[in-house]
Amino acid sequence: ILLSLFVAVILDNLELDEDLKKLKQV
Image (cartoon, rainbow, N blue to C red; front, side):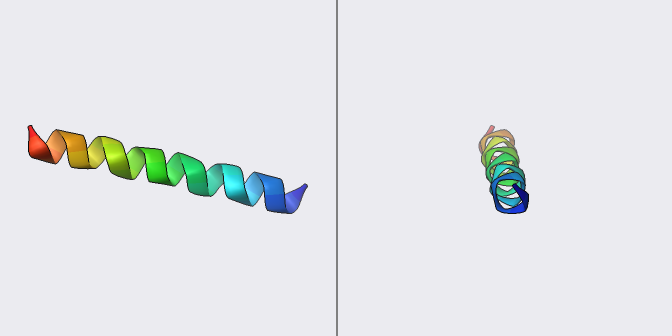
């Protein structure tokens, strides 16, 4: 359970990073 939760948090962080990159590109 902890591992799945940890992975979910990492995926969320990656998505946020991608959004930030898109904002920076604009």
